Image (tube, rainbow, N blue to C red; front, side, top):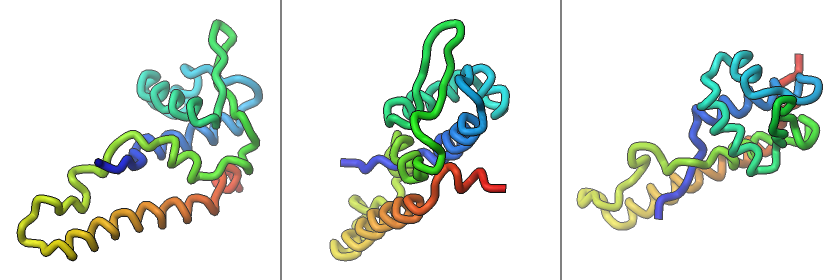
Length: 137
């Protein structure tokens, strides 16, 4: 079974969107958010959907609707954002060695363990930072 990892492009855009929302008073419509981030609205709304599902932001529909943070920026860890953006398997068979006959079973196992360890290192590092940390002047 393929492990899901964060899409790095989506992760970067999610961080930027959260920073804009943290800096914004009240609700921010997706169109305004897309304009500030110089992004296509359709692409951004996909990311915002994942952030809503993860409970990091809330959405209010309608003419006066928009998005806002659910909790303070200093309470949102980057690992939460990373987890919310887990939408793809490791790209291009990242460290996939299952079908490579040139590797011994122990080497294949070691490479798979490395892949899993890398994901743990990333999450542990991201747990130490918050959205507020990225906003410091």
